[in-house]
Structures are given as C-alpha cells and as structure tokens.
Length: 459
Image (cartoon, rainbow, N blue to C red; front, side, top):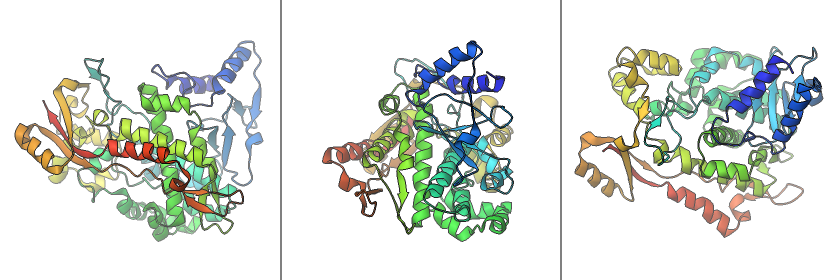
C-alpha cells in the first residue's frame, strides 16, 4: 500500500471523529472490504484497479467509481489517482481528470471559483446542544466542509446525469458551469453575512455581476457557448435546467451536511442515515423524456427517503435554534463595519473567511472574532405562534437583552417533485400523488415543527 493510499484511508476514517461507526456515509459493505484489503496489504498482497476500468465515453472527464467496496484505483503509471470526491450515502464516488485542458472542469481552475474553498458551507452553525454537557467548546465555524465541496459535487452529478440522458458535451458545458458556479457570489462568512442585507447579498442577484467582473462570462462564452442571461435564469431555478440545478443543489448539500452532522452528533440525522445508508442513490433515478424537455424520478420510494432525510436535517440542524446560537455572532461583528463603509460589498464578494477574519482583527480582539467558549446558560431562545407574542416578550425582557429575532416559515418539502408512474417513463405526476397520507403527514409535520416567531436573548 502506497503512502498516498494510506493517507486517503486515514483521511476518510479520521472524519468519523465521534461515536459514529467507521463506515458512516459509505456503502454498508465498504468496511468489510476495507478490513479485508488491510489484511492483504499487511501480507504484501495489494490488488490494484486501473482507472481505465471506469472510463465512460459519455462523460470522459468524470469517472463515476462504484463505492460498494474499498478499491486501490491507480493510473497508467500504477500510481494512486489522487483526490476523489465522495458522495456520501451513495454507491458512487467521483474522480475528475483535471489535466485535460479545455474541459469544463479545467475551466473551473480559477481564483473566483476556488474562493469558495475558503467559505464554510454551514456558516457558524454548531452541532445541537447536548444537555449532558455543562460547557461546549467550539472553534467556529465547527463544520469543516466548504462551499467548493458542495458546488463540485452538484456539478459532477449534473455532468453524469446529463451525459447518461443523451446530452452532448456541447449541450452540457454551459449547464455544468452554471451548476458549479451557482454559489460563486456567496459573501465571505456565508449566511451570517447575508443576513446583514438579504437583498444586497443575494447570490442569485449577484451571480451575473461576479461572472462579468471576473471576465469568466466572456471567456466561457467563447469556449463553451455560455450565455449569461440563460445561466442567470437557471441560478434563479427557472426553466427545466434551473429546476435540475435546484435538485442537484439539494442532493449535494444534504449528502455533505448529513454526513458531517452525523459524524459530530448522535441524533435523529445519524440514526436515519444508518437506517437508510444509500438514500443519496436517488441521484441516479433522474431520467429525461426523449425530447429532453422534462425529467422525473423513476423511484418514488427512494425520493421520499431522500426528502425525509432533508426534512430531518432542517429540523435538527439548519433551522434548529440549538444549532443556531452562534450563527448570528459574525453578523453582529460585521454589520456595524459594513454600515460605516469600513468593509464593503465588493470586499465581501472577493474575500474568503480568512481575509474577513484578518480584516476584523483591525477592529476587534481575537477572542471576539473567534468565540471559543459557548455556555448554554448564557443565552436562550423562545418561539411564539404570533408576531404579537414575540413583540410582547421582547418588550418584557428589554431590547438590550435581545440577540436576534426572526420568523421561520418552514421549508419546501418538495412534494411537488416529479416522478414517472409507468415503465415507459411517459407519465409524470407530483410525488405527493404517489405517497400515502401518512407519509405526506410525516413530512409536512416536520415543516410545521420548525415554524414560528423566534427570539434569541441573553439570560
């Protein structure tokens, strides 16, 4: 076993740093295969697999490698192929041949796209509070996956699915570039910074200006027939390709977020993922109609399983007040500097998190920028059914104690996503028409459970 192979194994397993099983996020048979290969390697018997085995002429740049067992995949020189992109809770991982100049993924090698490698996918969300702990220690932001990870996974799935559905490389290129760059206008700091001014920092609105200012729109128009007007519409989820972008956006972040949350926290998400270890395989169920004007899912049960996982993620992490106690902290630091013009919109759309924290160091002490200790007894939250109740509570405890107020309407359960109802794949209906009342109620009740008027305050 080579040093790079050992490093990759350690890298995969090291992320399971809690009580999550070592195979968490991988195919159920992966660990058994890995342990067998480990024994063989110790005896000096290493069986390798050539990357050529997984070459697919439909999408020659992207290799979809089966992840049902641990594989030593090597290139023509018998060297390890290098970094792979794991699609957690699926039977597949991806490898990109980045050395083929002129390809879509080669075109993504630019500083504007790679800035996303320095922006946390989950901002300052934290794993939900465990009441058995007296004090929680965070190095914010605690979740380590980045917007780049999310964006690449979404683009990889898009490339493969479009190719498998008969779209040519010329047809795919502008779509894949748009999917890859749909978050390119995310400000440094992510969601906490967007809350300073939701309209001003809407990445969908800023998408076109960032691509124009960077010169990428013009360059890609020449190379890939990239149309900025069409791409801007897709980023706003308009049209068939805009809907496809929305689907792969959700598939990607649910895969990554559930994996990292499940590694850190023993809750509903981890439990559900262990019971349904391959729910992200739903990405392979997307089929287009022969005219390529519509698409739908061919496995309604697996689609529901995915949407339920997404529902639990919103309930336990994305919209859980216990996970959002620090999520407004960065907003409070940056907002006054932004309003005084000391930090500009242009800077926030150019920087990553490191540059932002460096700039904050001019105005705040380090312990203020990176809040190391969080004691649940210091802060609390309440949720109310009406805005009047929320307002009365704020008046009662005093505005100086209020950290943040907001109304959460819930989230879209995506019960309108299309599914095929016949083997010939000609009849399409919304998923809700295929589900039992019990399943619809289960998903909609999760949406209702997070709805309300919230107040975060100092005790």
